[in-house]
Length: 230
Ligand code: 5RP
Image (cartoon, rainbow, N blue to C red; front, side, top):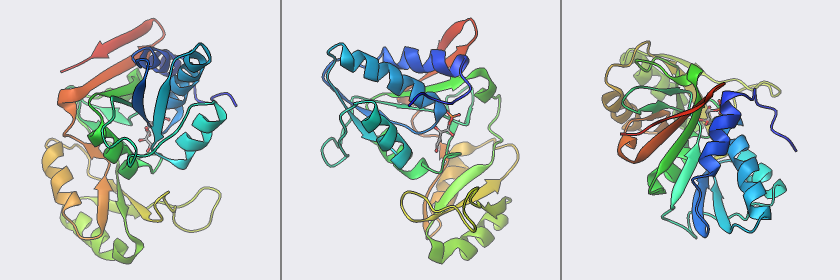
């Protein structure tokens, strides 16, 4: 099954990230179209003899990795990962991220936290001077209304994400809802992240502000890739 993502920079970034995977390592496999390019290249390297085990962050990642012949495990097997490869919706100059368009943010954050190095694959369209994308928040269904009220009190506009080919709310791989929260510009991502994640019923939010020190961002473009590191 070939990746149906929109190629170009994403493919270049994915292939470069796959080149950072070392023989014998345990790696996190993020979710989204850009990571799938990395997985295709990892699969190719496995066919040449590289040994690697992947911990998938979603059903999408698990299904695609299995189809590509990438051996899979869980965080119970590898609570510490050598490296994780993941995509992002926005990246700021301090390498803080917004993630979660694919509703996989909670497992992506668990895997990012477990990884010694976080390799983010993106194209130029994701690079911004200040984070301002909608912030996905994964919340248990029981708490969706009080959390929405609290988000409004924090200055955000919450919208429960609806399914595309399913009536009603999107149900995450963990059985929860996603509230997409528009805040406009986010000048203090760490502060907003901790305030949202302190709300009872919230599992995680899509702001990833705490991993910049171990993050490498590979930005793919038509002329190749540029690498951003702290
Ligand atoms: C999924 C994510 C994705 O990594 C992010 O949305 C980027 O996706 P893509 O590579 O398809 O643009 O956070 O929850």
